[in-house]
Image (cartoon, rainbow, N blue to C red):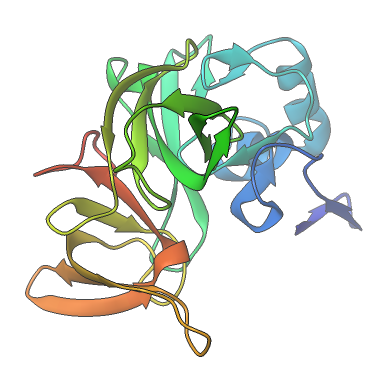
Length: 221
């Protein structure tokens, strides 16, 4: 939720219900005006969006309240520019420019794993659902997905030796290698130990997602 000031009037712009958690998303209008800065006012931003000039994950979005969240790719048609939404060291969603080649790919964090009619189902951060036979995939693991088709190109569990990205908490914005994972208990959450440069940090499992094997699948920063 973000407070925006236009012509000395303050109002609250909040994303409409969508795939992302509220704290990990921003309305498309705010992204276009305040982060990408291709509009000066809310009215200008809404006009750009209504003209079908903005795509999210390769799909045209015409609602200025459409929720844009972690790892989403925002594309500007007329400028042929593409941006991946990441969380910086201050815990803020921020657009990072992406190449044309990488803009057709997205990393989807697995938020939930469950059985449905005898099949393993994976629900990801951006509201997608995938069927798999790979039981090694777990919450915090990720799928590398081609967008907008939704085809899985690669996959990786949250496990020792994989590259992970911290998107929340005091270590937000950090990328490192998973060293170990502790299980949850009645007294504490599951935590992940990650080697970041020359130091090791512990963070809550819910703040972590895998972004590659020996190195990140995509350029993140």
